Amino acid sequence: MAGSHGGSPKSWLAVIVILLGFTVGGVALCLGPNWTFFWVGAGIVAVGGVIALMVDIFSDVIIDAPRAPMDQR
Image 1 (tube, rainbow, N blue to C red):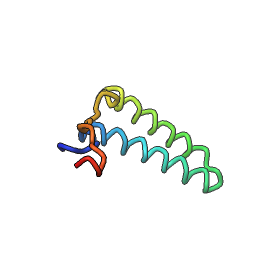
Image 2: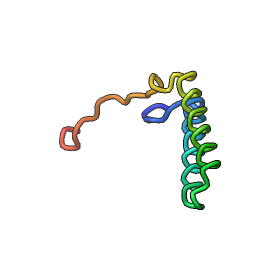
Image 3: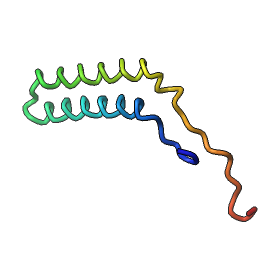
Image 4: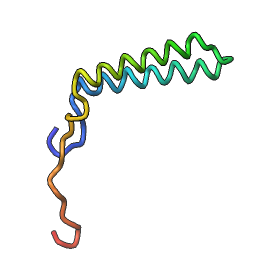
């Protein structure tokens, strides 16, 4: 992914798991609140956090070259 700020697929997996957990927890709060499903969502977020630590998500950054302003091109 040259010229991009995207991460690797393993980092996106961790992000998707965390977003799934937030979604489950958010829906559970809107439905009642249903505390059982809320804590299931919190557990999914925790699993996503562990996955993020295992794949070292914070070092997975692609940095672009510095860009020149439009008038200097």
